[in-house]
Length: 243
Image (cartoon, rainbow, N blue to C red; front, side, top):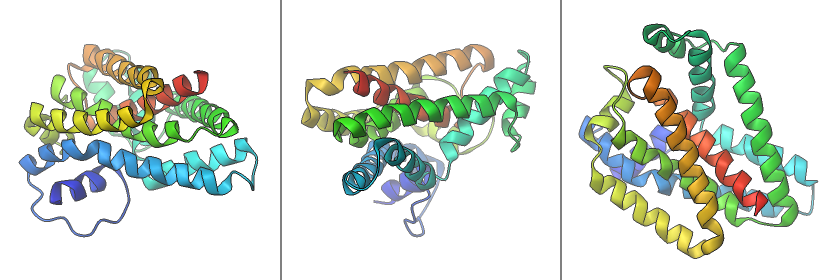
């Protein structure tokens, strides 16, 4: 259970108590629990959508749900989006400069633009789903997005010498991906065939971002993991709202 608590501590701001031995190998094992974190977040926003469905218009509900996700994760993944696009926009192809900008806590024009566009797309997709009374995508989008980042951690090298993401990259194993995939497959099976295209879209979005960044940096970073989760969520929600 310590690895589950570590997964929640790494991906959210949900209070999970004091973790026990947090060594690098334990961080790697926490990858197996990423979908479990996602399903808890998904159930929370789906429940909130049901409670609010008779009291507010779909656009307002959508804004509230997106805000709940941002609060629950401490804006960590959104910060990753801003850092990644600031780095790519301001680094001018220089690897060291891109990594330096990505470490900067300040947000620039590229990062702000990327955040606005991503949040607008997410709110638009959630609005369509709420208006249609579809709650299953709200449950599955956070789950699938957090699963989609696990193969990226294993498949791509880490671009920095140190960091929590480095520990996960070094100590993540195929068995952790297998466990995360089994959990995700069980959830998708409950939703049926309608969930397959959104899940494929989420994985494709995360993989495309990872491949793009890898070509420029020779690896990924924790910011890229966060950005991949956000893009995968948007891709899942958009595909589900269009189906």
